[in-house]
Length: 258
Image 1 (cartoon, rainbow, N blue to C red):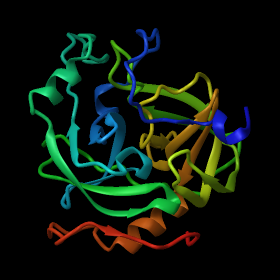
Image 2 (spheres, rainbow, N blue to C red; image 1 turned 90 degrees about the horizontal axis):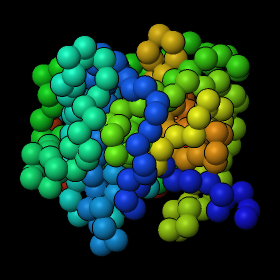
Image 3 (cartoon, rainbow, N blue to C red; image 1 turned 90 degrees about the vertical axis):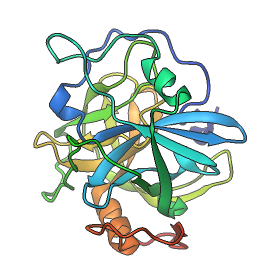
Image 4 (tube, helix red, strand yellow; image 1 turned 180 degrees about the vertical axis):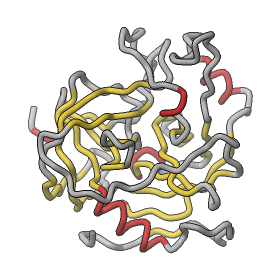
């Protein structure tokens, strides 16, 4: 098995994995996260989106999670436990919400496939939603970080996995579906493998800022689009801090610009 085929694109089509023993995120750590479902001719895939702009109802996710989508929906999962520290363990509760059309309609408003990034606009955001700020301080190799996302497991909606930062390096791949990637990724090590719904999930520093966006993994090695690339992507979109509805989704031809 070569390097590329051993990568796992962290969005999910198949049945969920068995229940996980890992702990989940605290309530305040989920206010910037959305679970998204993308319906395509292949079926439905699930991934994570990270809220980036509340006034504009915008969230960012991985492009490969939403490519060829003919219907895009999002869920903001609320907690129901007595201590409000762990997720509802009702199996596939969020699947029921999607199937009963209780999810929030969303649309892709800007994308750059070369960076595996897509910006989506939601019809509405929950009142408790908070945008996650981009990290401004330089990344220190070997520093602690956290991967936040949906592992797509039967009794687990949100999961936080601790990890260690590595280096930002160029990434030029072609995904199995033909999508060419020409970007920069933060290569980090997680304490455990990330589940298949983590794509589009937040990589945060200890201050809670966004260091990167998860796109792929190989065992405990995680590849995430770095903050500098995300910042450039958002600037080129020209959509932040505005509530205007664009006439149609935009797709950039930018290949290697950060």
